Amino acid sequence: MRYFLLVLMSMAAGAADWMRFRGLDGLGVANDRNLPVEFSPSKGVVWKTAVPEGKSSPVIVGKRICLTASANETLETFCLDRDSGRMLWRAALKQERSESRHKLNHPASPTPVSDGTNLYVFFSDFGLISYTLEGKERWRMPLGPFSNLHGMGASPVLAQRKLILACDQDTKAFLMAVEKDSGKVLWKADRSDFTHSFSTPAVYLPAKGEGEVIMPGAYQMVSYSLETGKKLWWLRGLTWQPKSPPIIHGDTLYFNGWAPGGDAGQQKDLPPFEDVIRVADANKDGKLSQEEIPAELKHSGSWQAIDLDHDGFMDARDWSFYRARRAARNSLMAVKLGGRGDVTGSNVLWRYDKSLPDVPVPLLYANTLFLVRTGGIFTTVNPASGEVYKQGRLTGALEGYYSSPVGADGKVYIASENGKVVVLKAEPQWEILAVNDFGEDIYATPAVVDGRIYLRTHGALYAIGNARP
Image (cartoon, rainbow, N blue to C red; front, side, top):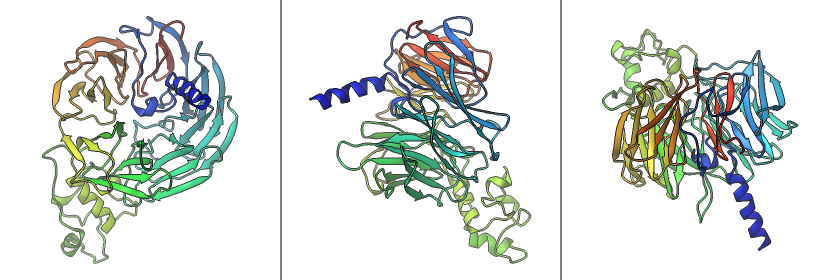
């Protein structure tokens, strides 16, 4: 009985925190009430603290708010006091290298994760590092360098004393589990059949059977045993560059995958490598230079994006991924969990492929899926059938979206790239309640805890809402 009460107390304490990207189970949902609708840098702000630049989202554990940043060849982890916004500690690492990355990415993009006592941080320019919540280093694990044209983006997650990290890249991709207290590698799953992606893995803990780590990647989603890293099931037909993590509700997984060139009607069926090499390999060296590829088969984008090993040529592996990329389709899908082996033809419940988000994770809240696409296109979908309830534009905020929506108090909060925080009524027939302008870029996803919204902008962290948490 005493153990049961301790478990309940632990669960209650954890529910009041926001210890990973998008909070409890990565769902982006809080049970808070009386959250504000209208607010701004001069209205409804409990405190504001200037913070160094970064795109990671706030993690909230007890009285601490933890973030990462990067500037002046330094990778920094820091914690603020939740009541006042006062800086409690800062820990810095020297940035020994600078990975290749997209202009919208950042050295401090991945969000930390906490087990309630310690903090776990991933920097692609360094690797993994763990701190106590007082800022004392516990262990470190250098990783990389990575071969990702746009830079790494996945955040670490925790499950059953295991720290899970996905490192999908163009060569030597892998998924690993690390013992959270020692930093010892428990298992490492080879994912060399995948190219770069940015999705954070999801953890599925069924009532019966073994736990799973579910990882989307280029063209395929794979489930691995949480205990051993063994491959359990896989699902084909994903797009070529996933960014959104899966979300799990009960025994159903929802996943959004969008990448350029994958919308309906944009696909092209390319011939196999052996057919192309037979007619196009002028110097007979068994590979293709840019000049040798026939004009009708050429890639309109960056050569680096399809020359995966960056040797200046396309070999059979490069062409195989390029061919799959030109045939890939974007989609939002619902998948029944619990399968084994290839579940492509058996476990997909529905697919939807119109006006999908690029980076933002779908929000499942109030029995509705909420989606936001760049340009301010907002869609609500029935999670049981994939049927669209309503689609429209977020008037007053028709711009880019990289932060993910969160749901609480019957409302949906969505932050745009240009700093507009849109508040919607969380209903299938949604309506705009307010558009709040913060005047500077927002890429981080807000955290909601104890009646407050914690919002990271380009240069500050805001606590908005109740004066007393």
